[in-house]
Length: 142
Image (cartoon, rainbow, N blue to C red; front, top):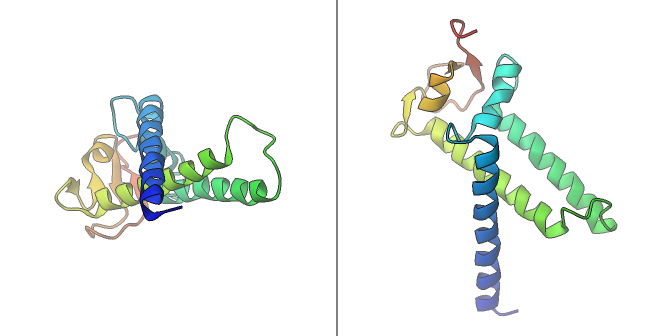
């Protein structure tokens, strides 16, 4: 494979990731917060589990599947080895974007938490703008 062929394959793979993320985000988040399904874990766990940890669990599921698929054919044929690799890559990008949105003062309202999370009654554990810690539901938003 040449470098040019590699880049073409890489671009095709990233285009698949973008298309899949757009479609799944429409199903999971609708027109609201793009991180909604990841932030739910924080609300359900009363802040004990961060959205970042939730994404890492999903990545662990994908990595475990890949470890098995390297050794044997898939029993679930609707998700190929390639699909699983791309899903894992998508979760890595989602994690980076979520983390960046929490740490960027330019796109946040309160201490590194996306404004949409604040509107849902979720606040940071500590007020540091780049703490990256788990966030907790506001006491007044039960």
